[in-house]
Each structure stands twice: as C-alpha cells, then as structure tokens.
Image 1 (cartoon, one colour):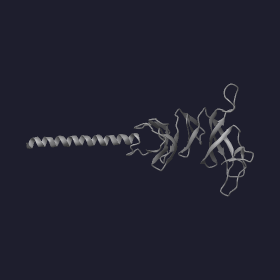
Image 2 (cartoon, one colour; image 1 turned 30 degrees about the horizontal axis):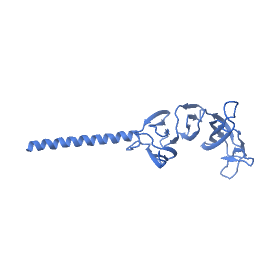
Image 3 (cartoon, one colour; image 1 turned 45 degrees about the horizontal axis):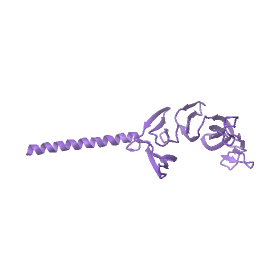
Image 4 (cartoon, helix red, strand yellow; image 1 turned 180 degrees about the vertical axis):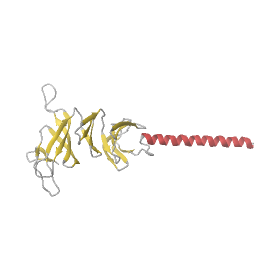
Length: 243
C-alpha cells in the first residue's frame, strides 16, 4: 500500500494476512505514486507521476513537467520493506489503467503511451496509441478507448493489436468506466455537461454500440426490406393475374 509517513514523505509498505506491517520503502521525492496493483506472488506494480526537476530556461519551478512513471515492487510478506525492482519513466501524459493478461503480460495504458510488460521474461514494449480508458474482459482481451469524438477502439488479444471501428463518434468525455462480465460501461458527460453512459458489448453479438453489432443490425434491416419488397411484388403480380 501507498502510505504517507509522519514526516509527510510518501512511501510503500506491506500488510500481510496476520496484520503485520512491513518497514517502509523510502520514496524518491520526485515521484508521486497514485496506484498500486497486485500482479502475482510477491509482485506488485506501481503507477504515478515523476516531477521532473526544474532546469534553467525549460520550466517554472512552480509548475514542473509531470511525466508518467511505473515500477514493479517485490515483497515476500514479511517485515522487510518492499523493494522497487524496476522503475520506468515515460515521456509525457499519465497512466490511467493497469490490465493483467493471462497472468503474464501487463498492459499499462496511458493518455499518450501504452506499455506492455511481460513480468516473466522482463520484456518491455510499447504502442503508439493514446487512450482515456482501458479495461480487460473475461476473455483475456484488453480494450483501449480514445477520447471524445473518436471512432475507434483498440483491442489486444492473443499477443496482437487490432482496431475496431465504432458506428459513430464517442459522444462523451469519459470520466469513469467499468466491466460487468459482458459489457464495458463508459461514464462521462456530453457537450451540454449532462451525464451519459455508453455501453460496449465485448462479445460483439447483437450490440448496436459495437462495430460488428452495428453490421449485424444493418444486415437484418436490409434483409427485412428486401423481403418486404419481394412480398409487395408478389402481391401486385397476383392482383394483376386476378384482374
């Protein structure tokens, strides 16, 4: 857990099932940790912001440049302080979601960059795709949603990325999001400031909000129109024969 010590210094501590609290891990004063997530036995992942020290002519000390940062943390459940094993600093933006895929790959989604970390092989890769929301589903896939007016969603599945096209632009500024086992819910506000909820069916079966679902719906409508026209022609033909 992320703690604030008596000297106001931020640090990391562990709390085991027996209620024993570990010693604290001193934190680099330039890092503001914001989230921590359990990955596997003895392994956690931290995300936060790195307060880049002001340099002459580059920035104001009152408004330092913030860069995204993530790190893995090792802790065996004892009184010894957790150890930061691997710390990585991004270029800009922030990390908003951590998604574990197949208990091996970790997707660290950010507003300007997304990192894929394999905690077994220690391999690190990245993709050039910005997002405001990222969530995993029960099929071990990850979905990354871009901001308002975007018309696509990126999907990570079985080691590969694909871009799904939405039937219309995303009409809200996403603020929070969740997953109920089938659908992803995007909560936000529209242009008028009114709260809205958008749903995205990850199974893509019969979902109007998903690209595949929209195609299915269009196919059904077109088929019904064609059947109606055929029926009309048959009725007209019978009328002429009877007349």
